[in-house]
Length: 253
Image 1 (cartoon, one colour):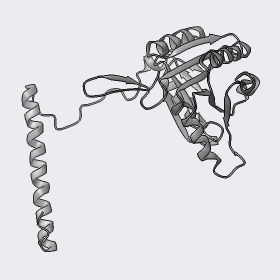
Image 2 (cartoon, helix red, strand yellow):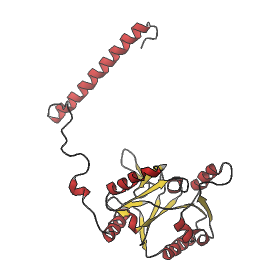
Image 3 (cartoon, helix red, strand yellow):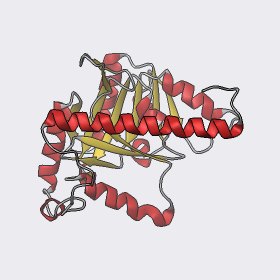
């Protein structure tokens, strides 16, 4: 655009450029329609169904089916799934894993189940940091982020899991920052069997029902390890998050 134009001249020039842009856009779409051998659509197609169909909304599996399908789908996506009959067995697994892999630094959520399992004592060879509402020190939140970024392992109790997609759902808040599942080298999500739902819609409805108490700061859907691919479909694991992810299913109730 000529910067020496008067204000009125600039408006005229902008209008001209806008018309040219629209003409090019229309020609582009006409060319695509011609290549497809059909007239160009100028109105959105009619939709007879909005949202999930009724048959899908009514579809549900029982608990054992949910657990089996979730674990199968999680592993098919490159994750590691294990099931435990009680918190003691799960705690023994955490202790053995940390010792075998020489875990040095851990970041975990501030959750009663992890206290019950005595996670800090079990990981005695590691430096364990707990994500808490108040650190008691100025700049504590920034230090927790640094600890999470340098952690070998992040541990959190997830809110839900979705059987049909092999997904764990974690909400973030004062006692559980999202960095726990995003920054460490490996992540372990503890999944209560009763929290595994068949469909994503079930999870979204339950979260929407929390509105009376305020929605969480973040809702994070994790489906297997972090993965990224370039335009040539060269897949890389662990670029934008943990490359090793565990779903530890705990039988409850």
